[in-house]
Amino acid sequence: MHSVPLKSENNGIDALYRKNRVKSISFLAILSGVLLLTILLSLRAGSYETPIAELIKGIFGQSSDKKINLIVQNNRLPRIITAILAGGGLGLAGCILQAVLRNPLASASTLGVSQGATFGAAFAIVVLGLGVTDRFGIPLCAFFGSIAVALVILGLSKFRRVSPEGIVLAGVAISSMFTGATTLIQYFADEVELATLVFWTFGDLGSTGWEDLGGMAVIVALLCLYCIIHRWDYNALLSGEETAISLGINVKRLILVNMVLCCLCSSVIVSNVGLISFIGLVAPHIVRMVVGNNHVYLIPGSILGGATLLLLSDLFARTVISPVILPIGAITSFLGGPLFLYLLFKGGKRQ
Amino acid sequence: MMEIKNLSYHYKGSPEVLKDVSFVIEPGKFLAILGNNGVGKSTLLKCFNHILKPDSGEVLLDGENLLQMPTREVAKQVAFVSQSVPDTQMTVHDVVMLGRRPYMNWGFTEEDHHIVHDAMHRLDVEDMRGRFLNELSGGEKQKVMLARALAQQPKALLLDEPTSALDIQNQHQVLKMVRDICHKDSMIAVVVIHDLNLALQFCDQFLLLKDGQVYRYGDHTVLDTTALKEVYGVDAKVVEIEDRRMVLVKEEV
Image: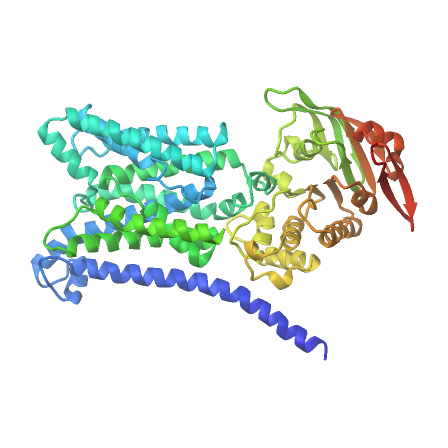
């Protein structure tokens, strides 16, 4: 008699554990579905209306209408892939920065890393006179800009032991400093440079061709791979630095490597598509609300979530007052801001 | 057997906290590190497994120097339960799974899952394995942390004030679990603890630290009126009630 209720109780426990796993996995599946749907919608959106079957054929250059092949392959597909790479990269960078700095408010744009990269790129265009199409010089300068910010952030959190809120406040200060410096560069730029710069800082997914995508894809894929391999290290770090060391993790190296990789990733993204805020902050938070803090699910979730959010924002930017395409950077800030405020106050209530 | 040889440590910009500390712990013994606040108890503990890097000295576990070993190898032999209990939204199962992190290559194996189940079973946290850590009480969390440490299959278990945030029932439960595991598995357990009565009730050996050095080391007899006066600066005596030793502190006039 005794073992029967015990067994059913055991099943109940397992059911709860399984429920959590199933919930996390199905959330990832749903996210992938939404991303796929958004891709199809993005393929369709535009002035040249065509049935979806033709568009899918167009991806492989198989459509009977040559125009469709051309539009899909040279215009819509690169744009979609850019959005997925940039969004996924920013989402993942946000997730990792939040983990290694143990700061829920961390992301490339809130810490000023993106702004540092923007300054570096603007410096490259105006002061060094590099063309906007320069595929190495601009990302390199952007990288130096972002690394400078990352070093300040790391220094503050390690040596001065500034609180998480303090770090974000420092990020605000650093951001405005670099934004100011970028404005100064713009002030001294000539008209052509200024036009390029301003358009570029708006954030634009449409100007990347297949040639630009390669570099971005490599860097983002590298970050994804590294993070997936080290997924349990982030979980360990959540238990505190001392516990992480006791679990065999070289915490200093982990933090440093991750900061550098995140800087690399966000500076490549910034130099290709301009400043895009809030995706990196909001995407991991949305995913975390469903799957919790386990990076086994949180990492793929942040990649998928970031990609979906950016693609959705782009779809919105392209269709809301079509045929005018609104700047994507403005849209993500505009939509992401309220979402961030919501998360901030919801989080505050729980504590 | 764990041998600590001539261990010294200083924090940046301050004088030496630990000066030439040496002692030996036998397997199956539960050791309490005792002493005043700031005397270096936690510091000593953290010097054993790479959390802090000692200026000089050796920490030998079964003849191997832990300080010369890769951190990951140390994690297979020494587990650590910290004073601060994390508050993350991870399931109990996943938190205990962290204990297999030092052994993991690409993913966890069937054996890892088996060991994790065993650890959860031994600390009686199996029932909670689907719940999130941040939904548990302090005592439950500490048991989960112990299960995680046990999943590392360590030869030595280090505990930094594991009971300071717990109520009296959980303090006793947690320490009893540690003592039983330590005796049954012939594991070394070292605890930094403030409550002398808890230490006297559960620990086998006592290390008294004073001015960064070993003041006394041995079984319960090292805790006497003189030691309490010289280490803690209190007038007290150790009384025996129902086969148990208790420290009674005289009220200051």
